Length: 75
Image (cartoon, rainbow, N blue to C red):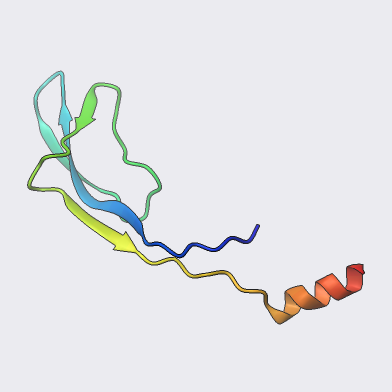
């Protein structure tokens, strides 16, 4: 599937998770993940000063010459 993505993707580069049972906090990293890791008894501390937000630019898919050649073969 090809799609254009013009806007940046925002993510947690580093975020704090608080264990609701014990009250302990843990720092996690989310740079190369699609979702934040949090157990059922944990919650993300969105207002923590330890959180670090970031953004990544995604490339815009293009029609490559090899794709054009495949399209010509199927016509």
